[in-house]
Length: 137
Image 1 (cartoon, one colour):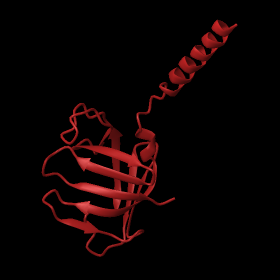
Image 2: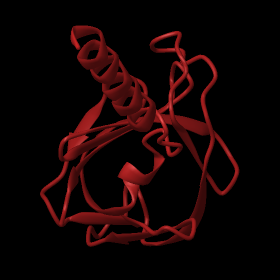
Image 3: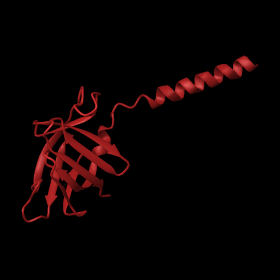
Image 4: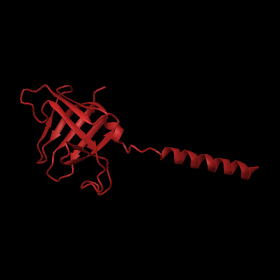
């Protein structure tokens, strides 16, 4: 009887482990939605901060990103529409490990991290820009 319960428990643990590892989005779907740009690093140490709603970025599930910039100077992201696609970063320059990545209009690859209500996108280049976002809704 004890052997039977033990086998059932092991089977249950293996099933839960197997099901939880079946996710195939690797965090990519976490970026979909609307975000406020709250900080920008130009890659040379200059950091700019922005009020929530000053610059809004929306990632759609069909590979389009819509940017609404209410600033007169339109920096650092001008209002407009761009395309994006996900691309795995094989070895990040920041961690040396594989990370989820994104590219805009097929150019420079950025790694990204989503943690709770924040999104950080960093160019995979030592002097490349980085962006900090807060989930809008």
